[in-house]
Length: 261
Image 1 (tube, helix red, strand yellow):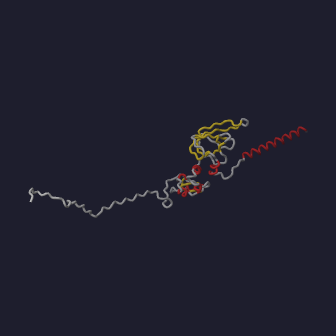
Image 2 (image 1 turned 135 degrees about the vertical axis):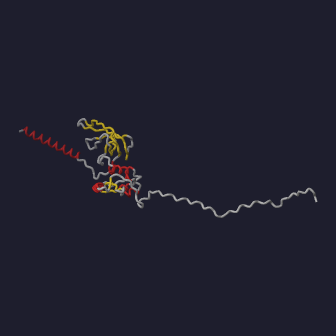
Image 3 (image 1 turned 180 degrees about the vertical axis):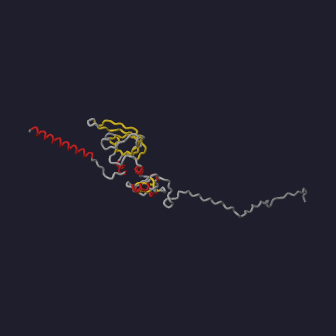
């Protein structure tokens, strides 16, 4: 009977320990980020933001007791939006935790912070997908150059953005809209479902088309020929010739006669 109570006590003890551990793990795995996760927020929360290609990846044992492995990922820089602009950038990641997985040979948009204790660069959590999307890249370019493009420009309609000097290929839409180009080449921001229908019916495309804005919205792009310079009109008034100078009066004339009268 005594041994039975001991077994019951031990089972209760280990059972509560397992439940406690499970609760802790659930809390850890249930890491949640404040909504919404936007390009702008991801950019502001990160110290380093860039587009790069993974050129090497090596694993090393981070925790011998549990066998956790971290990885050292080396990127070839393709475009820098914030922070470093080196030709290559090294990032340390913990794939077993919440860090994204980077595969060699692929391109990624990296949002990173600087771990000052370890003096390494690590991925920032709670950011948009690291898979490059042209829409996100365009917005990152605008965020990277605030002195050239005001912040409010990001929420303007496409044509208004172009009025402010943004190129056609750099036009962006709000995060719940998709950029398409109508049959005449003009940009428009529509819902994804609408964009799909327009493309299927041939009324729009996802690829920029040549487009010349209509006069009135933008200044005409046709170069006007300069007006010919007026030719000088020849004078019809005849100028009188200058008079030939006459001999001065009072000059002495010598006589040809040799006699004196």
